[in-house]
Image (cartoon, rainbow, N blue to C red; front, top):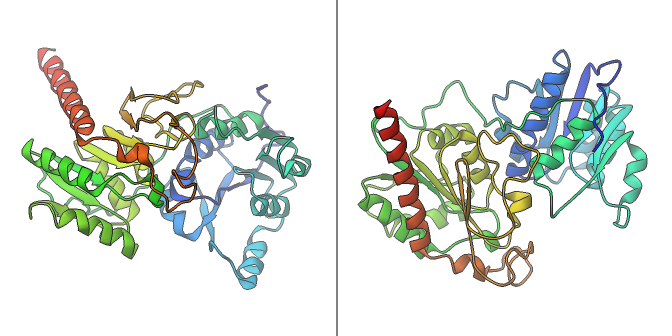
Length: 373
């Protein structure tokens, strides 16, 4: 893609629109940082759904977070329009849905967006923007897809994710300062991304037998707390269950101080990778080229992961389920969000244990090298 020169005059107020899930919103943070570095005097606001705003807490490159409900009422629409209407010089639309384009059109006279391909529904949307890049759902990682928007407005690419942060994090106060602990986040939003409860239990037991404190994390939704409780009940009392007991920024702090994080294809796994901790990510139907966790210190225009196979890039160890159809990039075997995914169920605890030992061996070698120096 041809890189554009910086906008002239530089925009004084920029709105970034990201009406997606938690992990998707985290993945816009390299774009936001790129915009900040290119237009350091600009006010940068971000429009997100109310239930995802926490992933941007404490982000130093954002001036204001504007929220809207997932299912807004007419009153919500009126209030949002009053906050947006011609308040900005530039709108950056990070997705191809209808509402983001309408909001961007109302917010700013100059607009840049990810648009559907010409042969797809919604191709008309490119006529609402001055600069656009086509959405690629298969061969371009989401971070790199979004950074193409930075190219279009003359901003140099910054590849670093910014995890949420709070000035008052007490998440590890229940843990000894010298405690070596591992965080297991077992519950993804959708059923088709789940591993097995027995697999999580066996993995946690292996970690305990290896001398680690095990911490179970989870969000506040009742079904998520219930799922984590099912795992916790089969483990020893020493396992710490924090499901529903931490904020997103507290969880980021907790994960960042852990020895290791293990989780499925979920927003919290993307968050874990952004903290720099070693991450074991369990993937099945999802295409890792597009949606693998973005590794720490990865600064390249090449996709970090291939479509097939177990692989490691920097701090991310991706374990992929095995089946002829993997990755199908569909919603499980029954093609709906509550479906099972046989490829995920086929991942054995032994594969996870092997990767845990690999990480521990790698850490031991690094410590020996450090001592030798």
